[in-house]
Length: 432
Image (cartoon, rainbow, N blue to C red):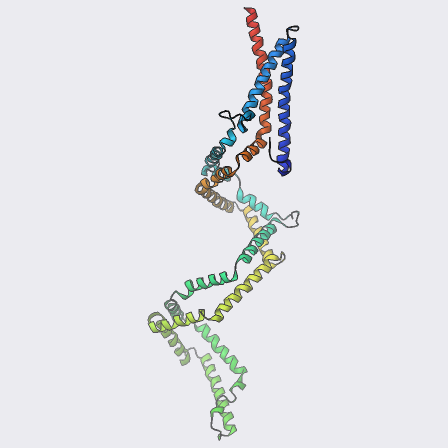
């Protein structure tokens, strides 16, 4: 009988306990009926010889009831508290039962072929696709795709909040140093620049720069006022000063216009030569390579760059948290649409179904074969941690009611067997 107070049991265990008590009462009542019948039949059989058959049946029923009571009780505890050998089997062999159960599950359920055969007939991807693309809203008003996105958003938000900003910034710094600062960029940059120059791919950039300068000159003539003249002696007339400034401006405009109009302009060729020398130097000149790498390191190590990286992370993090928390955000809506589209493809594309099912089955089989002992050990370890009395109580609540039928059946079968034996013996002896 359960030693745990009724109030501490779950509703399901409370119902099992009531059913167990009812069946124990029934089995005990059957034994009491057999005992009463035996007493009455034994007392009156001299006056009514036919009661000998009732006595034999009652006698056999009592023997069967007591034998099965002993067998059922011996599973869970010592009968009448007497430490008879091979009784209280479950509490005494709890750990062995747990190991045996774990081995049974590992051998018969966590085997690769068993898992593969089961999953092969399940149509995982098709079922998942049909569930994801189902447009009908659930009780909370959301479709399945929206629910998936909502749960994923909650998990992603939790991860983002759990990340310490300092740790993320340190990680970004370490990654930048490992993959950006420490590698030598100069040879690669030189080779890249050389290919660009050889292919004249830089022409567009040069044209854009020249056009930008021309547009700036066209709209900023006033900036040349005093640009040169303020450096002339004070005795030079103002007219001459203004003429010098205007001359400088017009010469700059004509020079830029000439560069725009002539693809073979000397300035363009000079720029081509400089880029070619720069590309060669980056690849082969140790001094230039060292200056380039030093400039790169100075840029990345600049406090302003670090502050910018921190600001970028904080902005991105806050933006993501806001978008993930708002069901009507563009991110959530697009994600739900994408999930529903994936579901539609999974539900209708047989080739995709076959690939996804194959991946899922292979992954499941790999995990089962690699970790099945660890999975099964959960059963063994859990049972070993259980208290012996608690384990006995749990098992008795689960199967005790059915075991009481054994006592009841033993009473009935014993009565029938006792009656049959007595009848046959009485007939044979009388016949002799």
